[in-house]
Amino acid sequence: MTEPRYRAADLIEYTAALFATAGCDGDKPAVIAAGLVEADLLGHSTHGLQLAPTYLKELAAGTMTPTGEPDVVADRGAVLTWDGKKLPGVWLAAKAVELAADRAVKFGTGTIAIRRGHHIGCLAAFLQRATDRGLMVLVACSDPAFASVAPFGGKKAVFTPNPIAVGIPTAGDPILIDISASITTNGMSNRLRREGKRFPGPWALDAEGRPTDDPAAALTTGTLLPAGGLDHGHKGYGLALMIEALTQGLSGFGRSCAPVGLGAGVFVQAFDPEAFGGRADFIRETEWLANACRACPPAEGVESVRLPGERGLARKRRALAEGLQLYPGILETLEPFAAKFGVAMVKPC
Image (cartoon, rainbow, N blue to C red):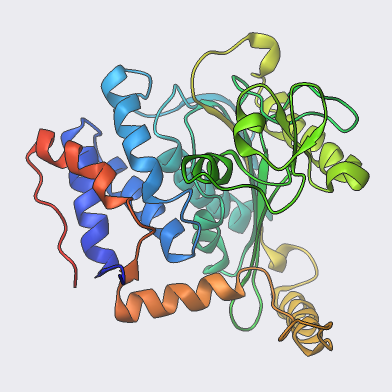
């Protein structure tokens, strides 16, 4: 059976109504909804509207703060630190990217560290807020209250998957890099476990430190492996350490503080190419690199070499034109909240 298609604007309106009724103030409902739908538009279906029920439950439990603004911990113009006070993470990260971009235009770079934010969802969903302005941007996050990834050579989890995303403007579509320090994410692992599926390979360790393709073992008594897996996991391990330092060390709040509950340390940095070698030269170089990658002869079994984000942006364009197909079951998980809040269910287009 073919999944129905929905207008992105209708999904955003519907989701915003849920978060507004749940108590979020100001522009928070609209920004949260737009960020979650953007993730689905780009194809990151484990980090889009699938997260909305979790966020709504967090609001109901009082573990996500629905109103107010972050506190300023430090501000030196080009560098700013916020205490996020467990405010909605998608909203905090979106605002941080916009403010970092504003400060990059003024100072050349703008950097914001956020302590005690809430879960921020899909990192790629924030990138075009900067790249559409011709700016390069970096976003990273971690959750100091949880651990599901072991350091290379170990069998006990120390880190979260610790994603990092980079948006790079070119003469055409931006390059949108969204990767993690782990070989896969908790979201994908949970989906595979629910559906009774396995990892494509030994992406995890069980409780005894033995390689396994079982997501249930990884999420209960075992651990996910860092990116690079069993033989080259030192690369993901190094990336995890860097992201922990950026998101927790620089914000001044991390694992040593013994935090409790779902949350995020966040690092955002925007760069204005005009303040470096110049915007025109920057675009010349990034466009040359993009064209060189696309023109690279494909390996056996590969149709063509793609740039990071290329498939997601094509999917987004199609979804905006024809309607968005959500991963099966996602809207059904929102039905109880719609009934509770008296919000009319979104209709297919």
